[in-house]
Structures are given as C-alpha cells and as structure tokens.
Length: 539
Image 1 (cartoon, rainbow, N blue to C red):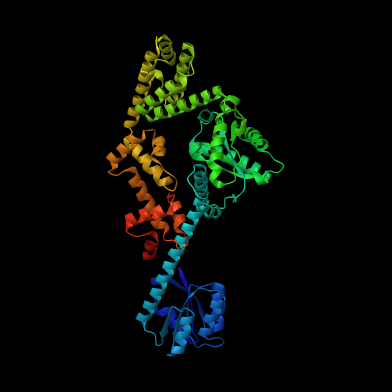
Image 2: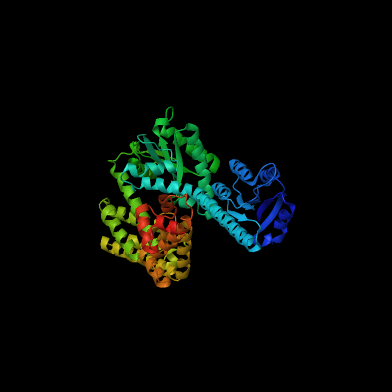
C-alpha cells in the first residue's frame, strides 16, 4: 500500500481532497491530515509517508519551506503541490525540490486522478526496481563463494597468462593473495575416497566436506598462514599456505595437525600432498601439479600421510612404474564406466605396451598385472550393481584362471581386449535405454550450474556416457546441441542480471559462466543483436 499525508489550512479543501477521490483505486491510503506546515512536518517525520500532498500558503510553515525541510532531513517522499497561486517563481522552486507536480486550484477531479495515478505508478515501478536490485544483489552475494572458488581453480589450471588480468579480480573477490608473496599449494584428499563415502547420500557427502573444511580452516586461521577451499570437481580440499606468515610454523606440522584433527573430529582418514613455494599467482598451477604428484606418492607411504614434493625421489624407477600403472588403470576404469569401448581398447594397449611388458621380466609378472587389473575392474562394476558373472557369465576367479592358462602374450591381450570391450558395450547399452532421463539430467545440471565451467566431458561423467554419444542423443532428442542450450540459458540469466545497474559487465559474465568478458559480449551480441551495455540502456 502507498501512504499519503495531506496538508492544507482550509478544512473544506483538506477534507475534500481526502474524500473526493477513491484513493484505494491507486493503491493509496491517506494516513494523516494536517492544517499547517508544522503539523505536516511532524506527521511526515513520524509516519514516513510515500506521498505528501501540500498547499503552499499555510500557517507556521508554508508548503515550500515544509518540502525543503523534509528534503534536508533526507525524506524521499513524492511531493505534489496544490496551490491557488499561479506564479512561475513558486513553480520553479517546487521543481528544484523535485516535486512530482504543481496543480492549480480549483482542482479538477480528472487532473487529480491523472496526477496521482502517475505518481502511484512511479512509486510502484521504483519499488519493483528496488526489489529486483535487492534480489540481484543477494544473488551476487550468494554467488561470490562460487565465483571465488572458480577464480582460484582457474589459477591452478594455468588459465591466466598475465598477472594484470587477475589482480583486480583477486581484490574484488577478497582473496588473500598479494603480489610478490610466496605461497605453496597443498591438496587434502580422503583416503580411499570411493570406499569412504560409498554409503553417503549426496547431502551427507557435502556435509562431510563442510566438516573437513571447517577443521582445516580453523587450523589455518589460528596459525594465520593461509586459507582453504573445496575443489568439488576433484573431491579435494585445496590448501594455500602463505609462506610470509609461516614464522614459527612448518607446512608439515600444520598438515599433520590437520590429519590428526580430521581423524579425531570427522572420523575419516585423509592424506596431504604439498608442492613447492612460488612467488607469483601465475606459478600456483606448478605448485598444484607438484602437490598432486606428491599426493599420488601416498600410494607408497600409506594412509594419513603428508608428502611434500621434496620427499619424492624422482629417479625411483619402481615408484614411477606404480604411479604410471595406477594412473592408466584409473583412466581405463573411467572409460569403462562411460561405456567407451574404443577408449578402453586404446588404454589397455597402452597399459601393455608402456607399463606391463617393458617392466615384466617374467611371465608370472605379466599374469600378476593382468589379474590385478581384473580385481580393479570389479569395483566399478559393483558400484553399478553389476558383476563379471552378470555381464560375461564368468566369475572373477574363472577369468583369472583363463588368464593364467593363456600360452602367449597375443592370446592374453586378445582375451583381455575382448573382455573389456564386452563390458564397455554392456555398460553403454545399459545407458542407452535411459536417453530421456539423461536429457533431463543434463538440462537440470546446466540449469543449476550454468555459472560454473561446464564442459562436455564433465557432463558426460555426470550422466555416465561417452562425450560423443551423449552429444548425439541430446541433439537427436532436443534438436539443438548441448552448447547451444547452455549458451541460451546463460544469456537468459545475463539479461536478468543486466537489469541491475550496479553490476559490472565482467561480474555478470562470470556469474553466468563466461570466463572472458570480451567473449561474453561477442556471444551476447550474436544472440540479442546488442552488446550488454546497449541492452541495459534499452531496458
């Protein structure tokens, strides 16, 4: 409801203004009547009306003085002056105080309804605009953590090549990284992650990460030497140690305290890998890669380990072999989950040619690696409620017996290739029957995560399909490509955000998932025919 105070020293006019118009038609409620300027001032200060309808000539304080005094107090009420004085000076003074209208007596009903209809509409538009700005501001505030995390992940993935591109954003998102300061990256991961969370719902999984983050953040805050954020895409917690503040502390000491506290309070086992210190934000990606390499070394050191890049003996051939074997097996299992029969064949051949054969002096070692792969494959099958027996009609023990009975490497490779391709095709066919669910899931994921860096590979992993096949069924079912749908969603969201004049274009670009404001402008113009700034002006 829009509220109004009427001020006029003539009772007949005052009461007439109150009763002659059906104010409810405009959504206006008269909440006060005043017979002089002082009474009107007191009413306005107490009731804070949206509109003041006032005469000019009144006792104690005239209408212009009243209006000026209210403006001096910061009151933004719309002022409508109704006066019997036809004087340009008065009208000019009224305009200088941003009065909405200057209406001459005797007042005609149609003039009143026209003037106050316009004023009421203006107030309604301003309220709607204010509500929209409040909503957009809240959306921005809600998006800040995700945008901050996104920028940090970009720093770790070598997205930026010039420091000038990023320090403004670092400051805008209040990330505690300063130019020239040394920093090192640590990566914290839950040991045997898949097993540790196999009975967790998605909500409980998020709560687990939240609890771990709180433990780590408290330790870093108490030591005043860094901060942490969750990289949800990799199921890892990123630690950024500020070396300048590490006086009296060591990376190892802090990391070991984190692991102890996580075990004590969260009841899970975790390990940490730490890269070397670097002096530029552009070099954080190198420290991150070193931290990943160090973390992989926990394969040898065991659970609840802290490993720095300096701990690794790069010339240790056996360590390299195990790490290479582990990485290839992980990639092969991922492709198997996606149902990519061609991809698993390529990786299996790579596993034999680059790892197993060059490092197996005896036949038993080849059999051992092949059998180990069978056991590794059993886990992803179990996760999808399948088994070797349900797909191939043979148990894992029977498969290993067949492996041990092969007479040459060619027969072994042929059997392993056939087995893995059969499993991959089965997995793909299983997914094919769920095309509509897949399309729905892709759209739902895009609608909820358009502000993030969404790749085809990421979506493929989300729906457990190969990227090529996923794109084919999406195009076939919807008539548009995934990228076209994603772009349409982002531009629609950008149009909403452009209604807020306070949001910078580069912030809007990031809020809707564009890494580069220039590219965002280009795409926006291609779709709407206008650059974002011109579109905003047209609203």
